[in-house]
Image 1 (tube, helix red, strand yellow):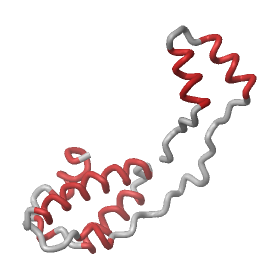
Image 2 (cartoon, helix red, strand yellow; image 1 turned 90 degrees about the horizontal axis):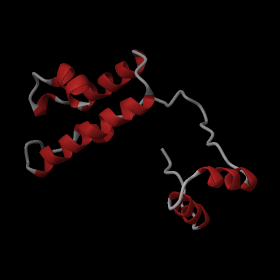
Image 3 (spheres, one colour; image 1 turned 120 degrees about the horizontal axis):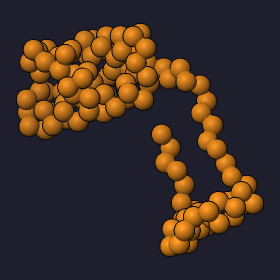
Image 4 (spheres, helix red, strand yellow; image 1 turned 180 degrees about the vertical axis):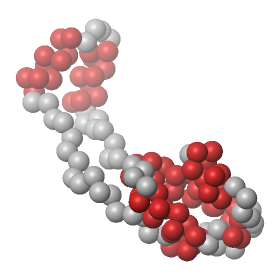
Length: 116
């Protein structure tokens, strides 16, 4: 993320030149160039980590990313696939042990796929 997106855009700047306005324009332009929303969020997270460290070590007074609004997620509502119990049992028959038992226990104890 840093080499592909952040260094080309900000590599020659010093930290105090990273204003909220400049960062807002950067993320807005990413969306305008068709960069996928999950990528934009990963770039934001990487930059946020860098700026939090810079603030912690007093290289900057405040994190300019705090007030940046991310572009809207244009992907719409994402649906997650769901198996009915019969499909799950059929799937278990295809999985070798001990993995079938691990999948069974994980499923019936409530393990779920993470949100994003």
